[in-house]
Length: 497
Image (cartoon, rainbow, N blue to C red; front, side):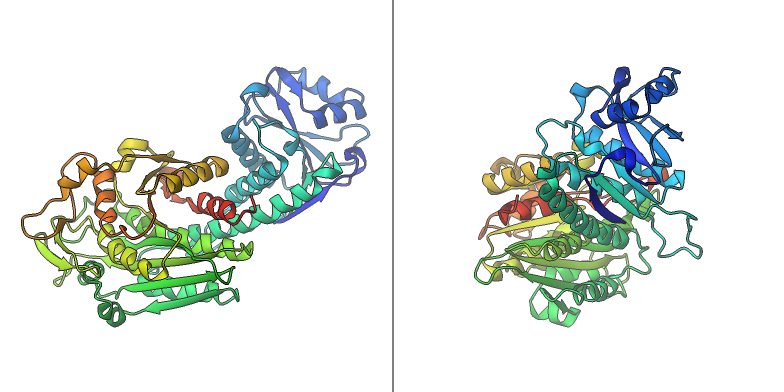
């Protein structure tokens, strides 16, 4: 999709479609009112017939309005003016993209950035519009024998800019939106691949292939023998039941010569059967999404590089397949981590924390400004937060606050849970330094407590994306979250937001 800006008068523009908003009560947006005036009241006459209510997401496609050169006018319901927020704005843009794609319009002009969305500025509205459009138009085709080809696909999306002073903000918003959308697409494409293709070695090779196209990115891949030399016993205990060897993938982005880096650590379990503590068969196919944390790290660093952020970022991905083979770890086994701490494996389905703890120890060598791990870690986070927000836990309140703000700005939200000392005793073991699971309750918190034992030397935050990394049902597929939130965080840290 090409995104352009347009500041000419709407009535004289040759276009497949112009998009304007209509609020509840059939109140016209600024541009809709202008088109109505130009067409001698034709718009209001049509609306008076009751074909559009103005509720959020309603659409009505019009043809041949007098004195207007555009082939079509798409009216999009925007709801009540006072209730227009980030969520409804995103829905409006997604609905717009879907209606345009169905209409056969090859290019469109959107006037929707003129809508007032709380305190949001033009740059934010442009960025969110691009992300909503790209999300709506995303199609997975990698493993399909026949791809759907539209006769007249939407190829150009123009943003109508009423004031020339907004042009710089619009161009920045487009650039940022495209970079973030590209990162999200990478994360979605990887997440949607099946477990028989997207194995640890595939992720490693694909990451290297993606990064080779960008000079500012360097990729290092550790094989199992190299991981063994690093003494990552917890990490290797997860992969030992599978014929697919584990991979530790390290991505370095250098946008600043001297600054300490931000380190992103991703859980990359390419398929999780649960190991010996095997999962129920129902919906087990969705365990291919257990590497979405890793995918989000790859997508985020790609976006940071594309934006040329003046900071340094390191991505560390611990990738393995968790299978119940003859060499698989057993409940009761004890392994030694890279840090030297020993872990009693009480449940082999709590494997994500085992690969992450060694990756978090590895992160120490970078003397990082901060470390953020992203993982589909616990089903408990679904019980707590559903499929709306990611869980956030941290040993540093300022870092947690920054991530929470980035989540609100990007509409890719998190919710902070406590990481109090009282929860740590749940992980006590009679036979090792720490057990890999706690009791029945507060599973998301005790999982983060486990990880916190390996993050004492730096500021750290944990993002549990098990509830938001993919959708189920008819819309089943990876979401690419939390790439947008992470990029917004890095943009703010780079002082370009």
